[in-house]
Length: 175
Image (cartoon, rainbow, N blue to C red):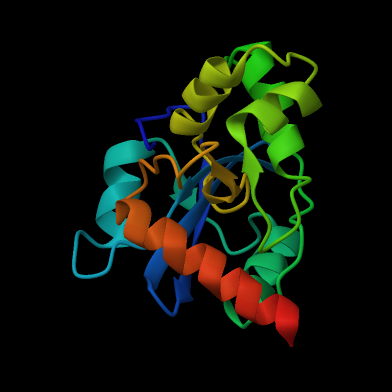
């Protein structure tokens, strides 16, 4: 999911119950997310590797920082943030914006998401868009599943993290 991105010029590291994560921005729009990697490389090391031009800035994406903190404290919400989609295929942007409409704790199949994005026959392409998603959690690829299984999850932690995020959201939805 995470590839080097020279467009990211500012970032913010946040502590979560699973470890540190980072939000990367370009021109005050979200461009990348590094999910927690418990017991692995620190978020600082990953930022240096993936976003070499970025600088830590306390004022990066302040509204999103509050939303992410609320998420990790158990108050799930649909994230509201401007995305920087320059350089990504237009179809990916369409799919990612549709994925952001999936309520916390709920799932949609690749086919349902393809239909919502206006391309009902493109479920495989939706899978490609989810696998290439540089903004996991905020663009909730963990809420997209195969018709008969959880599907995949290319973020660190794989399907275990996908299950944990969905379980966390479902529990928060019940409160």
